[in-house]
Amino acid sequence: MRFSSKAGGFIFFANPKTGSTSVEKLLTRYSKFWLGVYKHTSVAEARELFHQRQRGGFFESAFKFTFTRNPWDRMVSLYEYSRKHHGLTLPFDAWTEHLRPDAVDGKLTSACSFEAFTDGGQVDEIIKLEEMNERLPPLLSRLNIPCRGIPKANAIPRAHYRTYYNQTTEARIASLYTADIERFGYSF
Image (cartoon, rainbow, N blue to C red; front, side, top):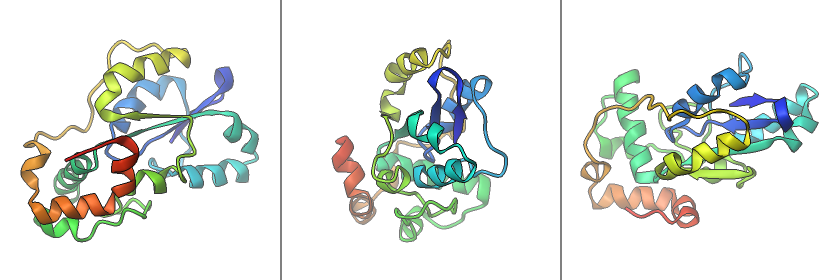
């Protein structure tokens, strides 16, 4: 989570594996990050933190935005990230059995659903990762933040997400992330 109180203020919620590190690179010079606050702080957690620190008014009035991503692609991204950075050795199908879409706790299996992360969608703007190049520059312009290209960060070379799935794992992700799939019109 990054925030700025300049020009009305904004809060960016870094939903895991949705391009958030790329966005943070663009926002770094124009925002703050509270030490000791988890990078992927959810909306409900942030609301509580701002109120505890006597900044509840700012939280309520700030422009809040986040990103979402196709759940099947997002899970492959999280899986490969976990393999590379955390030594995950489970095969993909076994790993998907441990996913917890209701968790927002930073563990390798807490690929929270959009609804859990945003406290039921309590943000002002949601951008699909697949639409970042078209929708992020106008948003940054509204926030008076220059955008001379969007950096790509944390990308791990891998095959297309569909190659990771079989019928069982495809259905498992569809079942776990039904609300995200329906709300944003995603398909396998």
